[in-house]
Amino acid sequence: MASATALTDWLVSVDTESKLNTSLLKQIETFLAAHFYSHEDQRYQAKSTGRANAQFQGQTAMVLASTQYGQTAMLLDVTNQLAKRSKEAETGVRGVAKMHWLGNDTDSTRPVPLV
Image (tube, rainbow, N blue to C red; front, side, top):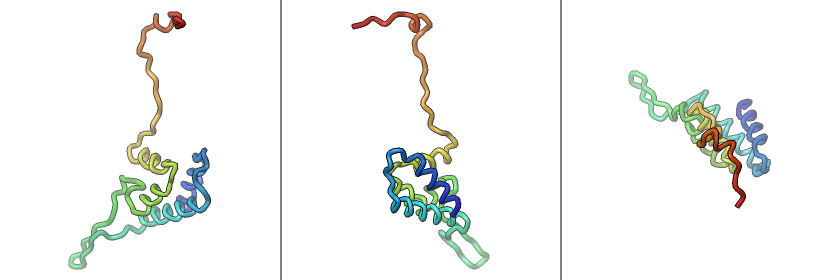
């Protein structure tokens, strides 16, 4: 539950437009808690008893998308921040804006004509 609370607190901090109300945040936190719990105690996708085979649901590399609970939490997040954070965790890359100067040194010192 601590992980779900921490992630929900983070979500509140990045919700600069206050799109998430208390009721929605409680639902998101509940689904996040179920998501984290399901990683601790994975659900069976298939199992058999003769010589004990098992297959578990989800793939941990899919982060929040790996469980129905994480998917639901992302769906409830109208800010889309959980989906972005999940994708960053999955790819290991945070989106950063970059600029590249395509001109040359004289372009940067040349006065700009007023039109």
